Length: 123
Figure 1 (cartoon, rainbow, N blue to C red):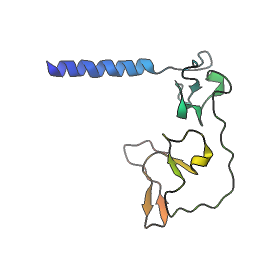
Figure 2: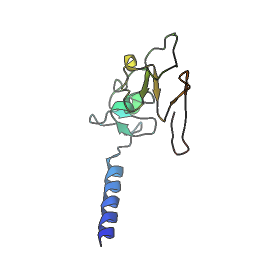
Figure 3: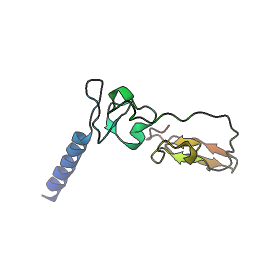
């Protein structure tokens, strides 16, 4: 009986999560509560408003953050300074030079390895 209740609870939670995802396209723009339309066609905030945000399908044309301007610079890859995880980057280029998902690793304290595990979708 406990198993049935657990399965029912998980199913209900999954169904609620699916219902919570708001789809967006040219005919169905995002609401003000989740103003940014991602490249995958879902509304949200935070990272949804960064690269891959579609202004035409978002709540308003200024919902999406502008991309930071690239600048020429020398970078030191002997440490992880300047790296920021994609879940923490919210569009302010002063918070980091490189945005990642996955598991970058130091190699012999002289280089950064960009790794991608078999079960990830890292970028």
